[in-house]
Each structure stands twice: as C-alpha cells, then as structure tokens.
Length: 425
Image (cartoon, rainbow, N blue to C red; front, side):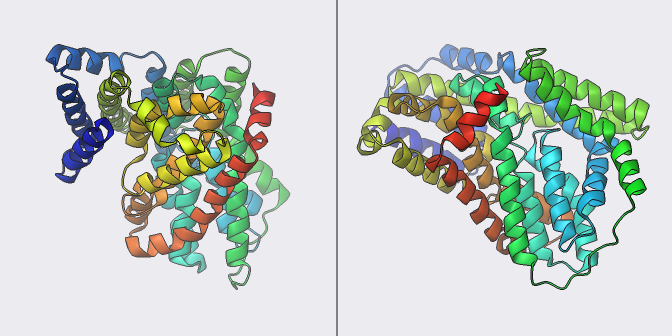
C-alpha cells in the first residue's frame, strides 16, 4: 500500500506537468498523510537540511568549472589534441570524438556540458567530411555520457550524499569503467564505419602534434591534479571542486587569454541557475528519503525482491534493467535521488559492495540520458547540431547497445570494477 501511494502520487503529479521537485514534495505529503505524520515544520526542516551538506558544495564548483572550460577554450584544445592524434585515420573524426569525450569527462563531470562542447566543435566537421549525420550525432551523445563515470563526477557526488557512500572511493572506482565505456564506443564505431569510403584527413607532422600537445598541456593537467590530489589525500572531493573552478578560471584568463569579463559574468550566472535547480531537487528528495525510511519502504522492496536476494548477479541485472527502463521516462538527477534511498538497503541486505553498485547504478542512469523520449543529452545534440530528434535516436542505438554490454559485463565480472578501485584507492 505504501509503495502504491508513493508511486501513484509521484507519477500522477508529474503527469499533470508539475516540475519534479514539486512532485517529490507532493509525494512526501501523500506519505505523511498516510502515516498520520503531517507537519509543515517537519517538511520545512527536512527541506532545509537536504541542502545543508558539505559534500554537495562540490556541485556548484564543478558546474562552474565546466562552464569556464567551454568558454575559456580548454574544451577546444582537448579536441585539437585528439584531432592531432587520430584525425588522419579511417573514420578518424569519430575516434577524435571518443578520445575528446574521455578527456573532457575528466575535466567537468557534466554530460550535458561535455556533449554541447563536442557537438559544437566536431559535428560541423563530421558533416563536412561526409559522415552520416545521425550516426555522428549518436556517437557524440554516447561519448558525452562518459562524463558522469570518470571523476570528477557530479552523479557520484549526489549518489554518495544520498546513499552515505564515500565519494572519493566512488571517484577512484569510476576511472577504469569510464575508460572501458570509451573502448566499447571505439569498437562500435570501427564496426560501423569500416565499410565507409570517407577520405581520411592529412597526417600532421610530428612538430605539429607536439605543438598541439604543448598548447593543451594546461588543460590536460587538470585531471592529473584532481585525481592525484584525491588519491594522495591532499584535498576532499568538495575541495577538488574549488580547485577545478579556480584552476579553469586562472588558466583561461592568464594563460590562454580566451575569456572576457562579460563572458565570465555569464558563466557565473549559468552555473548558479543550474546549481539552484539541482539543489532544490536534492532538498526535495531528502524529504522523500526521510519519509521512505520512516515508512519502512525499503523493507517492502526487499520482500518484493526476495526471490533474487540469494543471487547478487541476478539481483543486479533486475535492478539495472529497471533503472534503464525508468531512465527512458525520467532525468538523471531525479532517478539518483529517488531510487538511491530505496535501493541501498536492498544492496546492503544482499551483501553487495556499495561502491561497486554505485558505479553500475550511475552507469545505468547515464545511459538513460541517451534513451528516448526524455534523453537530455539526445536533446542537447539535436539542438546544437540542428538535427531532427528521430534521426539522432536511430543513430545512437548501436552505441547504447555497446555501453549496455559493458555494464552487464561488469555485473558478470565484478573484478573489472573492484580490482582497479583497490589499485587507485
């Protein structure tokens, strides 16, 4: 009964067009009435306490860092580096998109920001070179969702706060899975473009390659600083967000001289707007989380999943398939905030490593960013590239299959996540 009231009130209010944050609050009030606990003061206190979290301070700083990287030219220099390395091979621009996506993922942690940067720079080049427009859009969209997996990841920060899991351990555990996602896209792209007769670009001279690497050196140093600082305990994930934002600002102004004060103001305003949306969602979700615990909703979920509790592999497959299904109808952050407090007790009861589950869970929610009809990243590519959404959906399907295959491979072989996580930790 409790599950039915919660789901029906949440989906019902969303179906009426209510923003997700308000729909979460309405679902919270429905639970409060059901439990005979309705008190506006409890609602307000949990709403305020939801945003009162030190780790969540990393979110606005990483969002600001992403804005500064795009405007300040760091993202473009990353693309130039990838172009100098792979632009001359068959299907080279596709490989450039994948390499650039992996590097950008280690800079900002925002799928939408990375995808917008890649689409703006590479999509016109791919169209001009004769690549299939829909396939190119699909590849760029699929590359963009590596950002929530490779640190620094905003998704890991939110999951860590909602599930009480170490954010640093999540960051370290996401490095190899993110690289494996990139490799899966490499294989898929090779398979799709091997018969195309697109002329490869000219091979750059060694001098030109070194010049491009030198120009992008300061951009490439940021992931080294962030991952190294976290690995050796120099700063926390929250402090890493501050380091990323300040570093991007200083490099853009004093090294690359590529950002004006008017653009700087726009970056701060854009980051503030995005932060306000995310933090309001987090606050509303924390109210739901508290009521889910009081209503003992996780116990009901454990009872429902009872037949799978003795087999962690099957349990994970069922949960991830459910998350992929929900990802077709709901956006990235709400899925994390709603499902994490429900699923973590199930994962704990089944004896599954929470860090390992966190990587798989965020990967599944990331794939939801490129599945229709919601697909935020798909909409970003279609908007930036001025391409019809139907075509982008067709183009992204092979890459969704490749990424899903990697995810379920990690379910079958947990050591793909756990062993590298121990190395980096």
